Length: 280
Image (cartoon, rainbow, N blue to C red; front, side):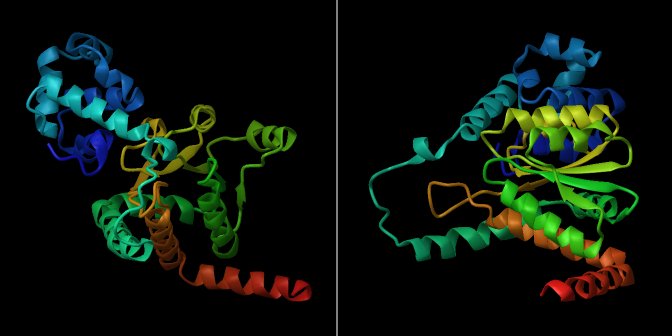
């Protein structure tokens, strides 16, 4: 079975087609992903409070011929998820140059990212971001914090009430202590996923906040907690994963938000520009 969006992505995409009992299996798998899928059929069935045949029917619906096939796909995915720049490093220079590789790899990765994402998922993210009753807080990892900052800078201009999660411990506690149902977190978490970001997602969802997750095609463990999951490909001309497809997805998200806000976005931009003039 060819994996284009990862096992968790397949589960999320097919849940709507499933029976209520099968959906219970899918939710258990996503909530404990990927460890839940490495248990026995009997253990997974017990956790989902369904029968073992229901588990097997669910996996058949996903396209897997057997439970061992499903677990083999999970293990292969885990190996890919743990790939680091060091493990991918080779001292042998590729035959083609970096420009040729970039011209081949990046446009395809961008196109596949944008075409594989269901319109309904992007629309859900846009509707959440357009709700100006929600305070938006963004947070990223070692590298992906750059994507979080890029998004927040746009949100500040077109809808306001948006911020980065502070890095200082006192400021971070102040930002998190009053989190509740009027909060929306946009979290960025890519492979070699970061435990502190998962802990943050667990904390804020327990307090009633909603979460938009931007991740890769293997899906961060946060996907089991998120209201919306926006996966991107990370194909790259170098040994580092590329954020070019993720940036393209953010551009589409911002475009959708501007469309949905309509005149309100223009009014906000005009007010921001007027307030900026004394400082330019």
